[in-house]
Image 1 (cartoon, rainbow, N blue to C red):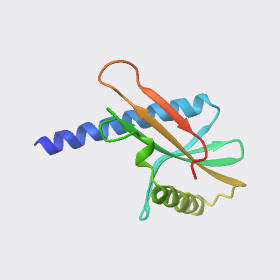
Image 2 (image 1 turned 135 degrees about the vertical axis):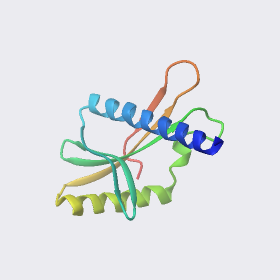
Image 3 (image 1 turned 90 degrees about the vertical axis):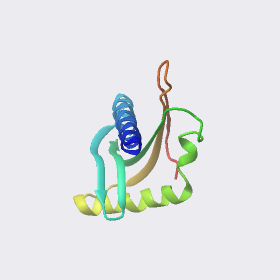
Image 4 (image 1 turned 90 degrees about the horizontal axis):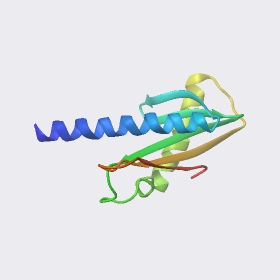
Length: 124
């Protein structure tokens, strides 16, 4: 039972982070095109348009820094996978773009106090 509860808490924390990230990115002038897009190669948390640039955004939410920062969880391997997934998303949607950018939003949601959000543009 504890594992199910832990999984549900992690899922809820992740969903909270994605909503917070999407709200922040829209406030920055981006347009959300897709959320949690999946294919056999993986998942993209958020797909957005920033002017004429397609933005694929990885969102990492943590309740503490006990296991490292959200940014430390996004490795070069993950960035390469996101780039491949962006190409798959474009093919699936039949869309062509001038440029693709990979962004990352890291969120720390402590037990007390406000969440801390850090948006890094162009991580790979």
